[in-house]
Amino acid sequence: MTEHPVLETQDLTIRFGGHVAVDAVSCAFDRGTLTAIVGPNGAGKTTYFNLISGQLRATSGRVRLHGEDITRMQAPERTDRGIGRAFQLTNLFPSLTVRENVRLVVQARARRRYDLFSRADAHVELVERAEHVLSEVALLDEAGRTVSALPHGDQRKLEVALLIALQPQVLMFDEPTAGMSVDEVPVILDLIRGLKADRDRTILLVEHKMDVIRTLADRIVVLHNGALVADGEPREVIASAIVQEAYLGVESSVGEPADG
Ligand SMILES: Nc1ncnc2c1ncn2[C@@H]1O[C@H](COP(=O)(O)OP(=O)(O)OP(=O)(O)O)[C@@H](O)[C@H]1O
Image 1 (cartoon, rainbow, N blue to C red):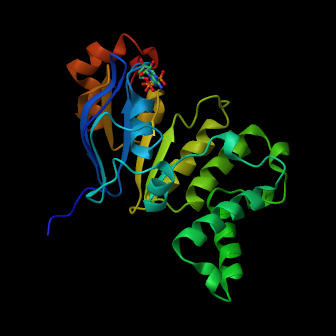
Image 2 (cartoon, rainbow, N blue to C red):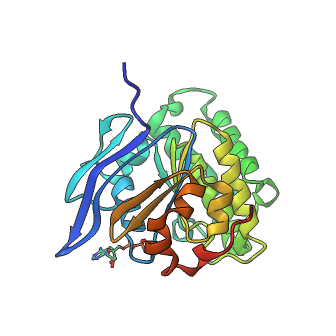
């Protein structure tokens, strides 16, 4: 039996009026890999993410998860099946504590997936799972704090915690370090690196900062005008003529020297 890639897009396309924002993108993502999706502003990166997570419907083409066609599924159904997208700050409950926020997601997940509520020890298990998630993102010490009182960096950690709480197999991060201070960035990168260490996870990362991409990505996919123009091992892709031409002139952060 052929093993399907965890996630795959085939000729995935979306048009907004006459504008093709994602143009016949075919790409497969395997278990245990972290792929950075890069490209100039307006290249279609976020739109591609929206098509995968279900926020947008494709004009044509397919999205498959473990070989199953999910192109027409709504976003929540895709989440149930294992596609998790990092929460934005707006999804947090600011007046609840960190722990309460995590428990809510753990609980919602359990209710949908495991029917844990039918079991006597369900509560204990949910509590333990939430504590485990909190420890994974090093937020145990802040667990009792109200979200609105958390420093910005910890709120961003909580976003990652909520993603983990969903127990997705595919984890999608859209510019996870955007708007972060210099000392906050390494913390989130360490978290993503830690997630990557679990070889069952498949991570997709939209990111502009080339130093971040260099340290995290196993592979780089380049979008330009909605189309996939390069795909491969980071060093090769960065050095390729098409990236030098199509990307370097436009996105200056990519032009920084390699760190070895
Ligand atoms: N809902 C929409 N309606 C019309 N056009 C859209 C819509 N969403 C995206 N676009 C257009 O599709 C193109 C791709 O946008 P997208 O946000 O995916 O680019 P991006 O690569 O994520 O850019 P950035 O790096 O600036 O975030 C842009 O030209 C954008 O204006």
